[in-house]
Length: 442
Image 1 (cartoon, one colour):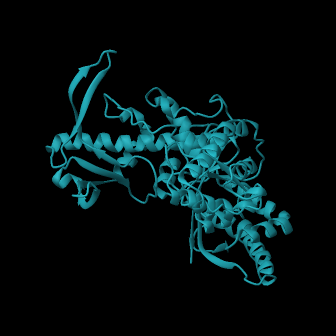
Image 2: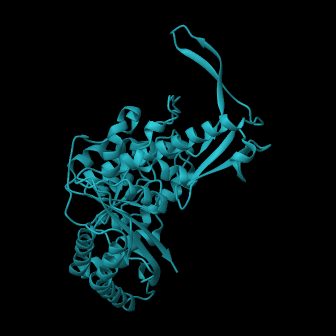
Image 3: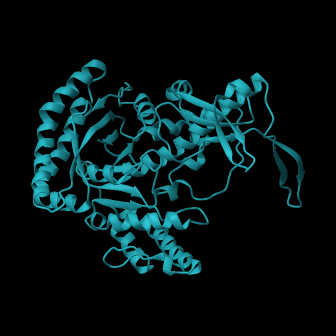
């Protein structure tokens, strides 16, 4: 899958055959645009067939969320010791009409850094965000119930309880500034939506209170209106309350569309959807449904600073998985075994059983892998071993269809753009496991 991405980058003259990023400073802007357009067009045209032809295995694999993971080098390398393969978003494929030089340089540096891991199929690169956002058009959305029907009822109250709404003002330089004030204090006409204990680096967060004025029909019968926003205006209490509620639903609606598509793609390829957001992990688990209709609560596993393994360079992963593949596979399957064992527990019983399984099944294997890493480190000039202070995971077993699609099928009419852009929606596969993990380097 990802080897094609490398081949296309080499063919486009953005990467050398040995994986070195081409020095784009030597090129004109016109030549850079030409090469990048060549890669984008080729990558987009081949991605869907790659997905359709991909053969999933029975190992534990991961798809990193495009919106709620940081994709740092340390987390990628550490995760390469947990998952058989990791799907990451292609940093060079975009639905935007342009890509900055700094973003292009950063993307090429990533491909250079991950070159051998991609060649070994430990990292798979797909234009995930492109499928989520196929255009830059800003739709005019209307809703009779303030988008209440776009939010699954199981998570509605939790979402609004954890919403943080801040006022936004426009500076003299036309910058939008988020104020450190509760938006309900002054009820301004611009606000920012975020959530408690959340990490979200993309999606809708800024909302303006706009009105449609001077509406006229053109020659084609289309209604043309002028959108008006008063940056210095304020709203009465009731109007602001309704608008803030609607904006929160719209922000969450946008996010659910992303999660819907990405969990669908993850399951289609036999991968687990990964998020670093505690907020997201909580509402995913809260809304989970088993075949019997019983909800499963989220619980942290592999928590309590037991320590994991930090690898500082891709070469160590390559050597470790090559020399100690049996140990790696045993660890991979053990995590799946633990997930299955915990599926029938909840609350305090889950915590107690998780602790037992962690120490009996997981820690001995972590020690073994750490020992293998140490032996590789002593044999090298620079070493490359550090420790991580936490690998936290919430294991949530769900239904026989993906969690979010199962919830959102009931409101699919209001979310037509959330329908998967890749493959056939009428599939039911094995029970998925959603894992939230957060890795912190000491």
